Length: 202
Image (tube, rainbow, N blue to C red; front, top):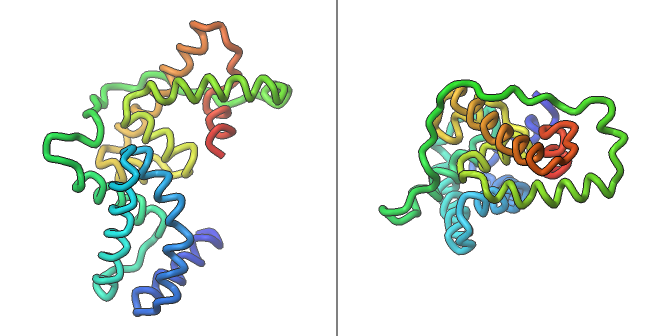
């Protein structure tokens, strides 16, 4: 467990014991990143803001019933996703269902040559990548966000998105396969989609 996780757990336990300062600390620490994640799930800013406020309100109301959290960040992300999902109209889905299928492509991370790409080339490819990401199915895009921006493990992504761990792996691999295919079609020189995503989402 890293120092950040230990600090989170310290404040989480103090919050569970009714300490308002600890609760405020957790809110200030995570509200922006939760909002950013929520907006990836639904572009209705009012809905996302309400979901975050409702989630923290529920946390405070039920604080004495909460258990210790092995990862506070994971707990909050999963809780927010469920809250947003439940806030949608009955005829609206958070994302399209995904057929887990089989492994599609095992991404190769950047080689040593990646460090030689110029800043201009990185900026150009990042711009193209941004437009391609928005064209991905919503659940694939969300999985990439959780993996490359939030650094969640496949097991954590599976739990957050309510799918199997293999399903999470397949979903990310399918998204990476699509991005790589687009790069090849347009004759672009990607020296590692995973590496570029790390730069794009940092």
